[in-house]
Image 1: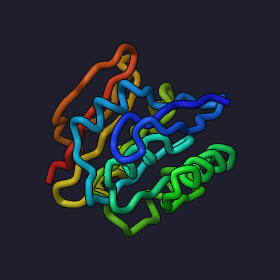
Image 2: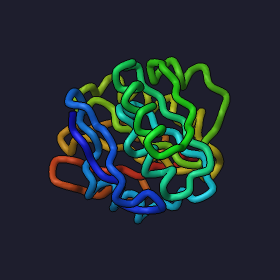
Image 3: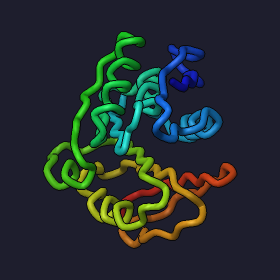
Image 4: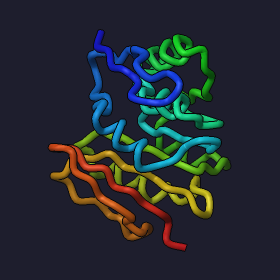
Length: 175
């Protein structure tokens, strides 16, 4: 089973399991992400969370409430183990992302999503529902392949950063 390390905060250097069946956010991308956004004392939602490495990083950096959503029971099992290894708690939701977004009433300060890189349809559907879970001045960060084009018409694109094949897109809802 793969491993990665937390890049900053109170758990910096701690090892996390990643599994061999998904693509975790690279350490360099996570480090850059959390150097650009402040999660301290904020609510944090991770969609398509996989092993929830990004959520663990958010907890390490002081996020107050963390919610992890994924449809894979195997991924969520690793997520639980990672949270236990840090002696942290987060709300873990076994759900399809679209179903979760359609049914939740909670709103978040920061939303991170790392959907399957080549599934443009699911990403655009997720983006269409995303404003529903975002607070007035909240920020969404999408990790995606640079090769795909998506519909950002509901959003103001605040920033784009490239990391090889990966692109982080920072979004605020147009109000």
